[in-house]
Length: 543
Image 1 (spheres, one colour):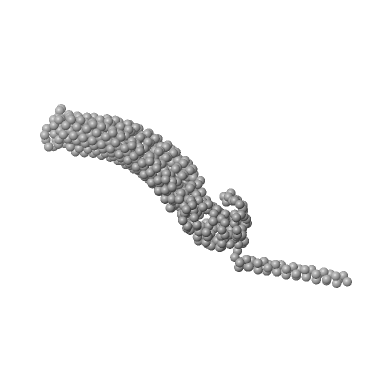
Image 2 (tube, rainbow, N blue to C red):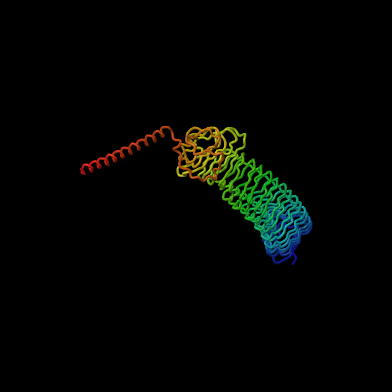
């Protein structure tokens, strides 16, 4: 039966299964379960909101006069398998065809906007052809569909949030040359294997390609400025080249990319976000001179990371930034203003800047500050596992102040100290918290005071053959040598602290020794006297 709707304000659902022809803009067949095929005549200019929602419609053909399809127009029409869109449609409203049974959609070239969730949850939709005038693909527009391939036309500027989210069969996407923004989770949880980001794109949104576990290759265009949080989280990328346009790499941007072995950072990156490259397979990282902040956990648990080169502008290295890596050492550039407690698990750090240090794992600290630095007091060191301090250069006149090496009473810190050049002065309490196994000084000016005598203990004191004095810091020299490598010296020096004791202490020791000698002499006197008397008694008895 053919049911024709004329100019009624509200349509009535036919009493029995019927094909319907629509001749007005206000047709309303929502929840109608007796309509099947619908034809829209040239008298109709729009399909109103909810016009056929939750109806039994199976197919619809729109005339060329229709310019808009309203929100929820065909929402939840679970029998709708075929739609033919007219050549004048400009707007497809939100949820317009959501939860239908469409298998293929051809978007005509007249369409400019595809609304939010327009084709959401179409589990049978395998193919979509987007017209050449589409500018905006709304949020969740094609999310949770069965699409296998998508070609984004050059007209599209914005791909909305979650536009193709959870299209688990989507293996290929071609992005047009006008796309500026790939919004939040636009292609998250898809089956993409490769993505080429065109040069037009400026922003890759949060979780844009989140958990695309088959994604092995991405080419980033030359205009990308921001890579959002978790943008490529848990993908299978093996290599990433960050273009020079990128300024920010967001939190967890490449987190848990377990196959990522190589990354090249562009010359404009300023911030590397927290966990940005954590739990990857990187072996080497070169931080460009543009980077100012390496945020917490940025390279955390990169178990294969053996080498890092830090750029000359880095100011902050946050907690756990390079923790649980295979780094053996790292050079901290002059620009660095703070290094957090657990920033490195590397045993050896070489500093080109003078900053106060609170480090948990570090065993060797080396200062090699470029010349020209201002005179200052060497900042304090709080490193509970410290074994070596090597001061190669401080860049200018420098003093070592009170409690320079801080250790709690429970730490029982034993360290070796090597100073290659002159130090202006060292406070008497500089090493009062630690035990010094070796103190090696290769400056020429004499170091007075009692800074070694006041240490918990001191074993070996070594100086250059050019050193004029015979003691350092209140302790007499163990030896003078022309050159020295403190890290290779495993000599077990005898405790030498007494060699440099104060005058009162020395006098006390001398008196003690004299008393002991006197006691020994008295005992010997009485023993000899006793033996002599016994001998005389024996001789008298013989007579």
